[in-house]
Image 1: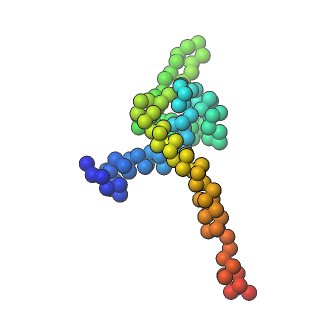
Image 2 (image 1 turned 90 degrees about the horizontal axis):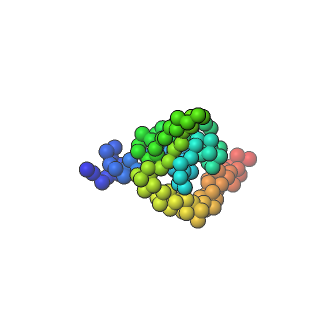
Image 3 (image 1 turned 45 degrees about the vertical axis):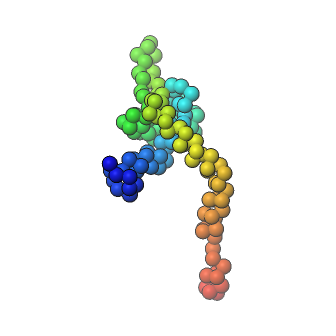
Length: 126
């Protein structure tokens, strides 16, 4: 096993790949308090389409982070819950969220500054 995060078979890269997907971290946080049906997950998350939620849940299930439970009652339903492995990612996700809360304004200010027109180039085009 290697610890060089730039190599394809590095386990650190696996973790970064899991967290870098736009929806993985958000979907993992949604069922933190217990099993949830897909419609409940969409309500908690907001802004995610049913298709993207389904794809994300399948990806998380493939990676062993969520468990799908089908209940064949009179009205069949499906629920998703975190696995023990999925719960281990909550602390890192929360840490990234805390970082974003603390430094998000600085990041947005840097983005705005990078997109602002350069006063020097405006003068040279006159």
